[in-house]
Image 1 (tube, rainbow, N blue to C red):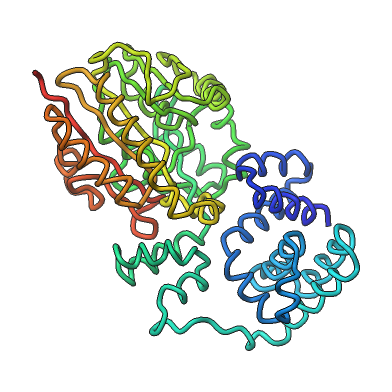
Image 2 (image 1 turned 90 degrees about the vertical axis):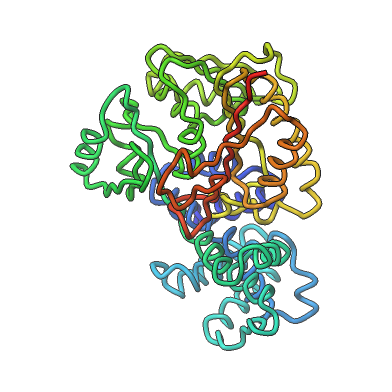
Length: 442
């Protein structure tokens, strides 16, 4: 019961605006038993991923009057119960119904508990009552509800990517995100780390086209291992690592990581330029920089300096860094599998402000790039406004900026053309974008 209460509380906090990471941190602190933490996390992620479809299912067992009267708290209870009833095979139907109704009695009032009980029992006995929009007549509405994504976003993706690719992306976003690690080559080798993890029963598979990165299948054993405690690896999504691979800084180089927190790319950069190179890890969030520093200590990486600053107005000397990475804040639409809450936070009206910020950061990053140096602009977005359009407009207004095709740096890689573009369900990992820009000598 406690795990379900903690999950219900976390879902309420997230719906009211709390970041998912912060809600999960509180969840972990509230539950001492690892099994309870595992169940509560499963419930939070499951209810967030399937939120629209869960609400659609619940609506078929509610009267019009009760639909309008359902409170936020009651809606979260219905989502919790329906997710356990229809998605979690390991939870028996009677347990899913009983525990949700008991929770409703504790956190609301008898009327809500009765409503929750009635909806769940009807859903158990009469699943045929749920109908979906016709795929042929209304493909966007059908896919949006079936795969639980905002319809406006599905419409955008259908227009850009087509039906089959959009369907694959939506499906990938509703699967647990793969756990990918990068090897800390300052402390071990890929062969040694793989052998050590396999000895613990952890499945390890290489990421195609990306050296020293592996997908692992047992997070619990991984983070309890001596390899984690000794800093033998860092966690980094495969697509996130591509931006650093595209930048390709030389050993001994100085690099600016302009938007560095939480630090996965900073670690990767430091390993690229060691032992004599330096990485300046800048970010506007001091709290996130503190987490970056703590992780670097675990990894034992040297040559990293941190700087709290707004990337739009860097207090750095112009033309001073031969390599600059600008992994800019973005809509995050490439990471909806890893961060399912984002799909319910984003609105079409947010793009102008995001794009303006991205343009400002790109211009500021280019200003501190040395003549002859390289800047990589990257996002975890799938949207052209934040990706190609930002880069194209920048190139038009900066005559010394030259786009270097990603395919030239990554021959044979299917995700590399003029730019790096990965998609959920097509490549291993999140969706991402990156462009390599060189600053011509005057």
